Length: 431
Image 1 (cartoon, rainbow, N blue to C red):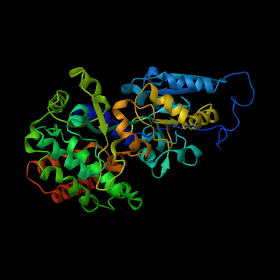
Image 2 (image 1 turned 135 degrees about the vertical axis):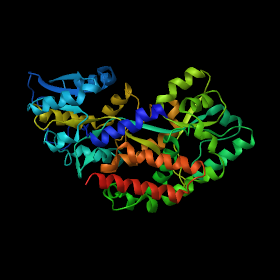
Image 3 (image 1 turned 180 degrees about the vertical axis):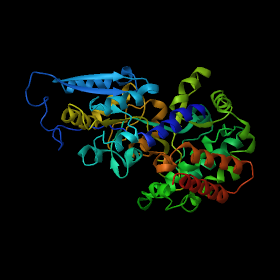
Image 4 (image 1 turned 90 degrees about the vertical axis):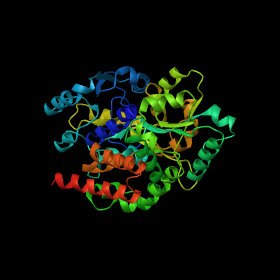
């Protein structure tokens, strides 16, 4: 999925090597920013500088809200293109100056002591772990998530209605849904399996439901990254469950020759009832078929539940340790961690919030079937939290192993064992 790669793998790879922060909260919350110009009655404005690689129009509603909420702050936003962003910010930080709040933070900035450790800030606990974990380094939080990226299963509402179907709540229901569609002469699912991504994410999503949802497994990704746990042991039951979709021939070897755009077209033109992708494909789908009625549901697990979407923080804020107005910046981060500010963030750049209790009621209609998953914080990408393994090499290898499995060349056990072998090779290469 080429758009998914750009919107998902790449951004998460950035966020696994770059840590950034956002935050906010209510004025009454305990914070380092308790004595600031916004509350001391001063008429002189205090400047707060924010730098980002998203254009100002992507943050317009949010920035307008900040300026309304903090009338005694002169909040200045500087956009720098992503291609130059790291170099520009590094120069600022190395000079001992720079912005107070920044988007995207290279791990080298943390090592150099340029970024504030936010771990003890009260607003950090307002976010689900699924949003905080990808932005944590060596047990410390240097950044806080803004809106998410995600992907799930697009479905054709007309085809579902014509066949008396509704989005599934369990994996078995999803498999039965495939059977009913096939019996009605409808291809259940389009799949561009020439890419290593889609099967990878479907299988992982079952693991999110069946493995990651258990509290005792919350530290698995960190342990796996360090070589203290293996995929072949931890993920095997969930991947075997997902493999039922291949056994039932919902996914077939011929799909290995299908490109992303071909699968998109197949789904858009009503030749298949479902297709895995994310919001980035919505406009293209509607352009191809303006009459298409779309919905997206999360991938379900063995037990009934709200399901999971594969995804993570699409952006984040960090705090300059040497910023000129750190107290005011902390106050802004605190306010950013409120439902009001999160709604403003999402207004101009669609995604969902990782804030506990965030209001997702204004979701576009096509994502209403995923609301319960969003409300539960069920948006996560395991590979973003594998430390030295978080780059593209391992996740691509796992996807290619699954392609071999679909072709009939490897068992699920071999797929995971080979992924473990690749993981160890990467660890050894970094010693």
